[in-house]
Length: 560
Image (cartoon, rainbow, N blue to C red; front, side):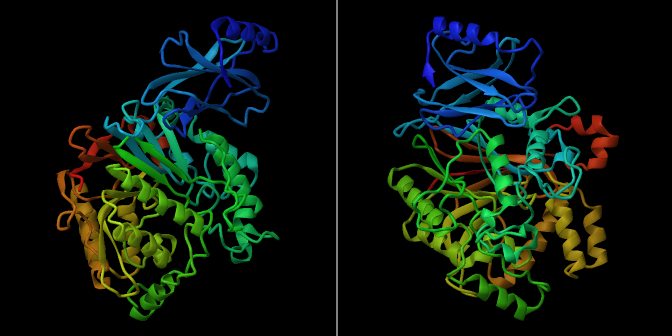
């Protein structure tokens, strides 16, 4: 990739025009840019037919000189194109486009490069995860736009194990299945194409959770532990055909470099896709993006009866086995190293992005969360605590609702909670039916944790009342384990609630993080719309498309 003069670019274009046909080409998923740092970015597109595609990147919206250019050929429309552009200017607005040569068709976007150390310019970014193909076109993120410096897709970017219009079978199996799942979510429907619009308007970062391959898989486990990955002679699930197809399609459809782990000394990681990212945005923030799925040990058996103290105790004891890992030792060590480096460099906010929640929420569903790997969870949190790393925010997803809480750890089962000064924001789903609130109520009713009368009372409540009911239910279930109640009101974190509460689990949406350039205060805003179903999309499309995101939760935190 080189910078060329207009004359040279025109000559190249003229040469290639003869190769391209006259048939119109479209860019169904528009364009995207991602993996941005202070001096480079990956640009991406996909086309609907074979084409010669010219990428242009410029600091000028009219793409006047100077600009950078690269040419690629899409022989297979199912495989997107992407290129990294280097030698960019730090903290600079860039414009880019993809042009189908000889046809005049194009799609354009914009992104901003990161600031360099020594600068405090403020920062604004968005995060969400969890969207199903049959629930597109995702009006919940229609207000996420170029005001953001970047957007993080925090896992479950497809649901490979749910039937959707593009792949109407219960599990994606072939590489084409996985590609079609990804293509589906960035395609226009009902006149909207919100995820594609978002990716064209700001930079993207992305990691996987489980549904990019299949539900609740453990990439570091032996395939014999999970019949969905058999037959296989591979030593780990992350070397099986199904995993490789899922990860290949994910990497193809994200504007990210396709990196791999090398020379870690851990066979679970070496040679595997490296989704870990560390990015610094001046002195305002550092971001650590983790893969919590590809290298984990087999999950512990779920607790069948959360009211059985013996079963609960056995689970907690097993979760503190120091030989079990969720991240893989090399990835954990790198995260600790980068956290400490950001702290020592004077970076104000440190955001740890991980698809799985890290706060203690009790044994229900804990096998799949960090709580099921409690020894490693303690190792990470104790590292933060013992090194006095301040202003750490864990940003997570997967629960399909928003809980905000302080993060503490224990040295062993039933040991006292030790505060870290960190807190977590679990962001809700863009579109998963049903949201966390009604799902939790259903689980609680089946487990006998609430009576039919209590369930009827919950059903009668307005949205804020339902959030409060769920909050009380969760708090009452974790209090006997010595865990912190949800929220930031009574702890050491200097937080002020501006709207809603610290629980928002009945809407679809995303969460915005904004750092003030002067005060360095962090404002966290959760945007939401009324949840809907596939039936709503089919039978009441106008009502779904008309939904507009509103603030359902907002608070501000003064840095330590």
